[in-house]
Image (cartoon, rainbow, N blue to C red):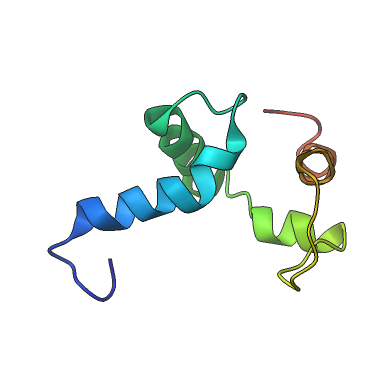
Length: 81
């Protein structure tokens, strides 16, 4: 947590609530979410923001369906989970 490095649990809880919970049912729980994030960003050097941007899915206030987001990510990762 950049603002309060002593409050790591709050930071991770916020990340789960904001990003992880919308991954259900593919993302099974908190551990699965963070394992997936670590694998994608650190181990495999994947950039989901770039994948979404390539599919014209940007943080512009326009609602997108989960299916549109999933298709964008799968297309950029050669259909890997």
